[in-house]
Image (cartoon, rainbow, N blue to C red; front, side, top):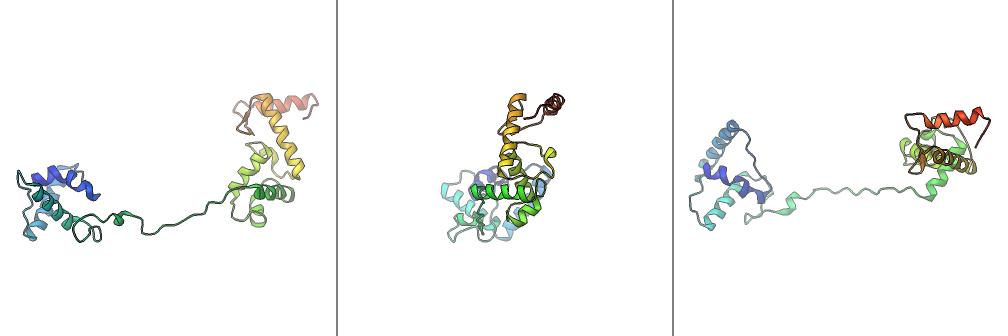
Length: 203
């Protein structure tokens, strides 16, 4: 099977069955199996040296016939490209967050408060999970962390006011990143808020 060993990658590449032999032991066993199958078919497993293009193609066709899975070949021995296409295509309609969802989230924050994502999902934002709603609420309030807001409720005006406040803090501390206040490991935001509170100042 020297010819088979040397040519299998080249000959089988067009069939989508590129064979990589990494282990001599496996190759020996594989060779025995191939030889047994082909001898049972009364077919010489070795491609003759100096074979003509027609002989080479006939050899390839026989390889395909013996080792291709059912349905992969056309009647003339060529590859049926439809064999490699998905048998079932699932079309997923990805929902997009828009102005309507934003208004519903405002209502959810007023009615249920920060942290009640499941209630908002069941009542106002069906089809949006807890994590998706939490992320949108964080962006609406202008803060990556919602720890300071757990249980907080407010109408649209109050939410927008919190966004403006967080933006001002972020710009003053250098912690305003991609539209939200990001609290760093140094505790910059907390220190800033503590200093303002100590001075009796509020935003």
